[in-house]
Image 1 (cartoon, rainbow, N blue to C red):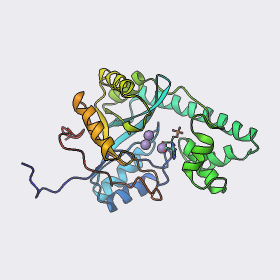
Image 2 (tube, rainbow, N blue to C red):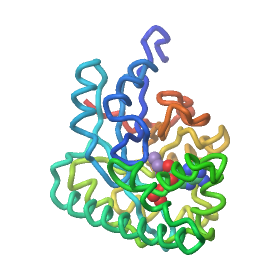
Image 3 (tube, rainbow, N blue to C red):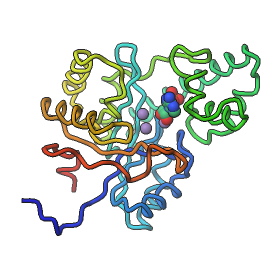
Image 4 (cartoon, rainbow, N blue to C red):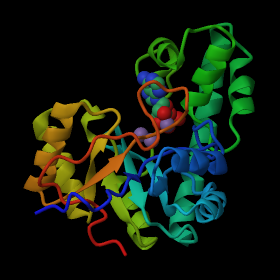
Length: 282
Ligand code: AMP
Ligand code: MN
Ligand code: MN
Ligand code: MN
């Protein structure tokens, strides 16, 4: 029986800093995590580990356990999938070579997005977005610049109007293969987790095929509890995890204190019967 007197450990295993499209520096992120009662925090910036060193120092100072992580952009059957790596050694050479390639693709894509804005009479958007990025350049920086300039009401509207697939300034990209992303994570000693799995608009059959590929490549788990999942989606993902003997992870996908939907450390508990990704962590 569960001992109700044992304090529950608060895990948040998906968050972003200014090393990608988060608005807090790694130090500010760790301080907010401490304030919000997080005990174990993973920094999982898009395609970059540049925030790790700073976050590790800040976490040690405030007594939080820091998990070095990553969120890798993957193309699987022409679809964009995000794969989180947890407990990775940032020194792993193959992974860093792969991430450098992804960052080069991001830079080229940003230039192509900028060219599309220029074509529709908005020549300053590329420079504006780059000015807001202090690490990896993301579509989020374009969205933030458009908000700043009053072109759109909020980030969501920027995606809806210009940046998401099918919209005027969208540029597609062939990201890492699932095989490469998992090989990098495993080579770096980490565990691979499918980020926000309910967000991909796949049929149940296609999603099963994806999970079978992921599992065959040694994938460890699914984010069952995350800010973008409602109760039913969390239950659904818990079912997939159990059926395929995958572990369950928890992450807010925190980007900004101004976000109304993703608060650092505020994620629902895992549904009953899930085996947590941290079950054998030291
Ligand atoms: P990128 O990795 O540069 O393609 O940018 C993707 C990032 O943009 C995601 O990680 C989210 O942070 C953000 N994003 C994607 N879609 C939306 C949306 N519809 N509304 C707000 N933010 C979004
Ligand atoms: Mn993001
Ligand atoms: Mn993501
Ligand atoms: Mn994320």
